[in-house]
Length: 351
Image 1 (cartoon, rainbow, N blue to C red):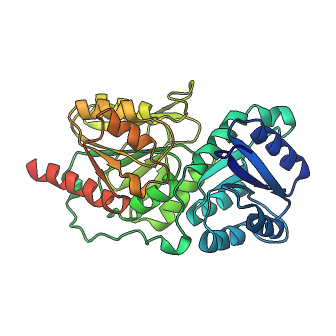
Image 2: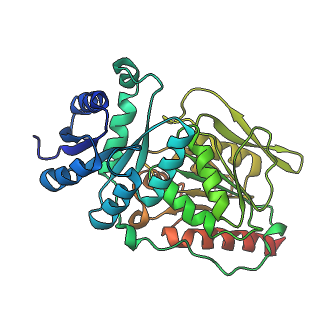
């Protein structure tokens, strides 16, 4: 085994799925499958014996609840975990809970789980495992609760639009930001790399916890204060201006910067529709999606924020945006909501 190889343990109750996942990952340069397990109890012993770098974990497991296993794992022996889920409402709900417990990413089993169907998604699986191996994973008990900011109710007077792009690690980061927003916060539009159906489940879970209203964006939605709009997992999202109003435009199309939805698509549209009357934020994630769009926003006069390296799960997208000059200032995750509101407050006091 090459010394730099990523060591992967596959946990899945299906022998066929274990075999297919192993074949895909073993064929990828720099990845070694060190073992497989049919359930969490076997996985627990193999983690001790094999010391893997990354775990792939089926959402629905026998003998021990997968979420209970993940919670214990992230408390006692935190490590990067990629959840393997089906594209079902139940799968989405359980996987969102897993992401809140600290799972790094989601890989969706295709509807056709035969070898050919899974092989078509091989690059996605390999990329997610590689991103997970580079992730900073914190013990569950070390995660601070989302801050509740004491702020005055002045934000309805601002015409700022807040736009956020995120990927690997973004579910947890977005949760912290959104839960700290006051009920009359400036409108927020989010592109998070997430599979279809999971985006709706994510929005619903945030909506049940947040002071603002959170929803999966629909084509034609009017963008108003006190609302957070999350791009559907299979559509590009743009912001368009119609007179004084801003609206959501969704469309199908090819991948942009390797993704659909693409952060670059959102940011470029906001640079054109809003100019300086926006705040751009780029959060944790693998790759460089959003870097060019955020640069367009900054050139249009919008203040731009990047999540700092120490608080990122994967310092990829913010790093690319910093290196191309798109990021005006970097902040730890714990300070980003406060800075967003400060910028919008400053804008309101000038008008």
